Image (cartoon, rainbow, N blue to C red; front, side, top):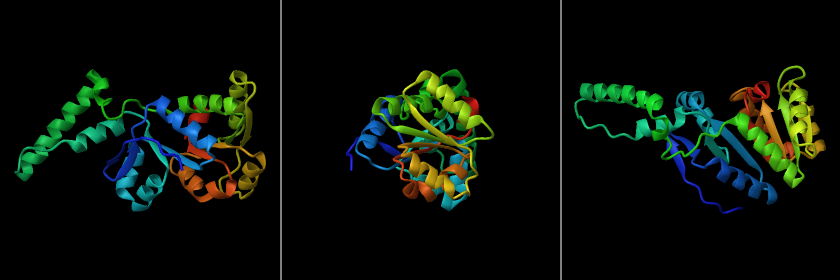
Amino acid sequence: MIDYDKKRLEIAGLKVDTYTNAQLLEVLAKRLAAKERTFLVTVYSEFLRYSLLHEDILELLNGANISVPDGIAIPWAEQYLRKRLRFQNYYLKILESVVYMASSLARIVLIPKSYRTVFPEKIVGADLVWDLAKLCEQQKLSLFLLGGFGDTPKIVSEKLKEKFPNLDVWFSNRHPHEQVIVDEIRNSRAAVVLVAYGPLKQERWIAQHKDAAGALLYIGVGGTFDYI
């Protein structure tokens, strides 16, 4: 196993890593080179909400090897929940928390960098796809695009090939319940699989099939294929 430095925080029980984008790519490159299987999740506000409501979702997300924040909501929640309230009276505590919520939300708009203390960068899935495509081309690894509607994954593969002509990229828009997907990924010998089945459905699919499909790195990318 690779020994790499990281500071993992818990936000209401949800574990999130504090990498910069460059640090994340370095860690992923090392894990790929060492053939370590990796499940990466990019968490945002809805993930935090569902993990608070459903223990199985919290367990699913915390089961990922790497978890990074996508959006400002996670850094904001970390700071908000870390604040110690001064008042002892129950109703004054509620008032203080509401005032702090309003002021902290205003600070997001006025001074967004104030939330880049613990989490230095947000890591956006739409940007990460391009970085991973570049990494795969450099390391001569295959990339598999799974999910999306109609010709979407095919179009995405073509756009990636335009920028990285030596990239070996595969794609499939099969329904997540089709068992043949696992065989397709395994036969492609893909090292990296980007799964676009929508939030939580894609993470469940990864958790269930990552060992059988045989790839090294799995990431749920939500609507990123449509965005590209």
